[in-house]
Length: 144
Image 1 (cartoon, helix red, strand yellow):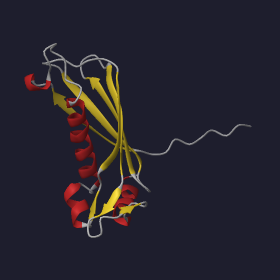
Image 2 (tube, one colour; image 1 turned 60 degrees about the horizontal axis):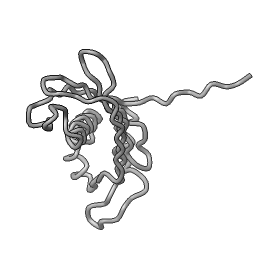
Image 3 (cartoon, rainbow, N blue to C red; image 1 turned 135 degrees about the vertical axis):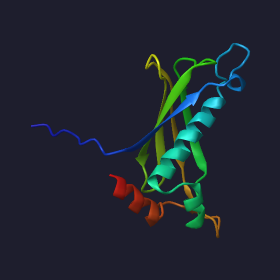
């Protein structure tokens, strides 16, 4: 009898973003670089929800720079649309890895998929850490 793999629990957060005029290019679609800003907003709010936002990271003596960013553009968002960005924490023991889904709130069409990876860096020494600090692990465990 085949055993089914258990899907790991995830902590997720969604944000709605109204596409502004300054977000679009001359073709009236969101310039590709602005999706990074949309992901950052969702990531920041997700980490805040966990209780380990950027201020808490700093107070704990860590920075978490993005070391890898992947984007897959499926469809374009345009001026006047509202998009929803779902950020889901998928790894947190050795690094922070977050999956993103950007979709049109009216049509539910997927617009962009993404992923970021962040590594802990101890502020005092500047050394990269290959395990996340205990405070992050505790706060994620409390949410699961």
